[in-house]
Length: 210
Image 1: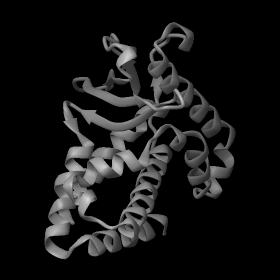
Image 2: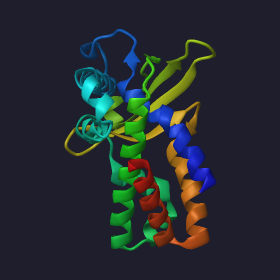
Image 3: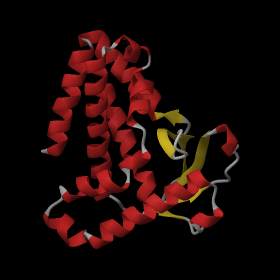
Image 4: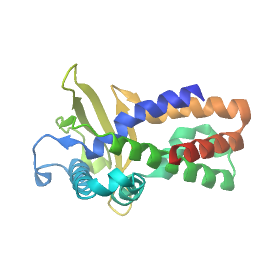
């Protein structure tokens, strides 16, 4: 699963975005999707500080924090559908449910690792230009590195029927992580089928947990 490994290395940076130090601006001054990202990041940073001692002795505590604070902002079923593309439609209900569970767990495990490796990079919001009434927006930003050029990023969010904004994709330098997943997952399915892909994801999750 070489392609998937490369994708996972990329997502470490992308998923860290919601807990990094953001450039100063009050959430009340931002459009709702940006404000949501800032509020989640502030809450996560506070939790990391509050649980610093416990995390040093029990790193698995990070899974609970990520699950409670950050994961509610993601729509895993939508991400799963986009990541599988046409293969989602050809999967049966049981396979779809199993894939969503494993994909969700994979993101949680990866996200949690990113939290433990947090190193004070700054995320700077860029001007928000989308129309909120369309209920599908991109929140642009950039990673400001101490040495080297800034890295452009964006979060893709949509507003669900309950009025909540949910993340369904992350782009780094214009490259969609969902699209990267789609390519790697399609390749795995061609080689071994849907059940084999789910099995591989389950094994990977077990290794990350270990």
